[in-house]
Length: 71
Image (cartoon, rainbow, N blue to C red):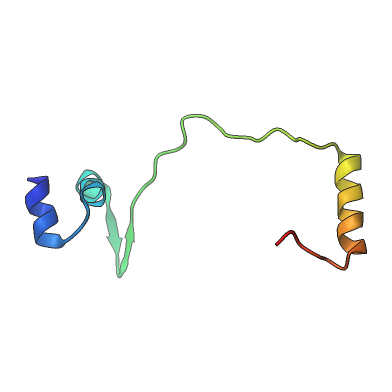
């Protein structure tokens, strides 16, 4: 069934499977389609690598170099 859906629509199999999984959960408001997303199973927070003194020094050096970026 998935192969026929992909052949008919031209979608890739992962995207077609996503569409078929979430079709019943969609709410159409005018021209906007809302697809609810599930919350992340665990909150993701990065731990700070540098302390506030180091961050303050890096910001000072950034402004001293006239906002030169790493690119």
